[in-house]
Amino acid sequence: MAGPRRITDKNEFLPDWLRDLTPNGSTRRSLAGKPYYRTWRKAVLSVFDNDEYWGTRVEISLPLPPHVNAELHAICERIMADKERVCGATDGETSADSYYSKMMMALFGRAVYDQIVDKWGSSDPKSVKAAEAFGEIYGNKLLALTWKASTVDLTAALKRMRDVFAGADADQARLLEKWAEDTFRAIFSVIVSGTAARQEVFARCDHALHHLVEFEKHEWPMADGLHRPTFKELFAFLPRVSTLLGHYPLVKDGANQGCSTCNEEHARHAGQQHSLAHSPHSPFVPQARTNTARQMRWF
Image (cartoon, rainbow, N blue to C red; front, side):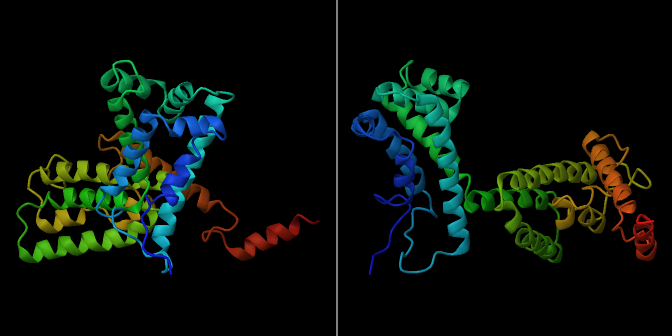
C-alpha cells in the first residue's frame, strides 16, 4: 500500500502541474537545470510546505475529502489556465533564459513583473532574489484559491464585526459567538464555490462592518437621532446570512441615507421585485389567468 504523500511530493500534484508550465523537449530539460528555475520552483513549493494545513501529509489510501478534491481541482485549474497564457507568450521560444523571462511576465503581467525585477533582481529576472520573489508570490496566489485561505479571511471578517461589541457581557458574547458560528457554517460552502462568490461575500462583510461601526458610534440615522444603540439594537444590525449572500439589501433601511452602495443595492432589489411581479411564473400573478392568456394565443 502506498504511503502518505503531500501536495509537494515529487511527481505528485503541484510539482507535476508546475511542469506543465514549461515546454516539451530539450528546452524543458535545459530550463529544469537552470538555478533560477529551480529556485523559483522551490519557492512555490515552499509556500505549501510551510503552510500549517498543506504541510501535513494526506493518506493516499483513504478517499480524499470532497473539499480537498475541490481545492486540488482549483489549483490545477488555475495552473492550466496560466499554461495557456504562457504558451501564447512563449510560442516558438527555444532559449531557456528567454522562456523563463517570458513565462514570469505571462504569469504576473508586465507591471508586476517589472516591480519584482526592479526591487529584487537588479533588472535581472533570473537573479536568486527575483526568482524567490516570483515563486513566493505565485505560490501564495495558488494557496489563496484553497478553502484554508477563505476560512481565515471569513473568520477574520466575522471577528471584526464581533469586535464592535467591545462591552458585551458573557451572555451577549455567547450570542455573538453563536451568530459567527452559524454564519460561518452557512456561508462556507459559498465562499469555496468560486472566486467571484468569495469576493462578493467578503466585499459585503466589509460594507456591513463599515455601517455597523457607524451605527455603534450613532453616526447612522436613528429614530430619535440621539441615543447610543443598545446591544439588542446593535445586534439586530449585524448582517444575516441572507443579506451577506445578496438575497436582500445589506441594510434594511439603507436607501437614501448617504451611501451610494446601499442606494444602488436597494434600486437593484426593487427592480428585481418589479420583474418578479410581472413574470408569468410570479406568485403575484394568478396561475389561472396566466393559463387563460396562454390558451388565448392559439385563437
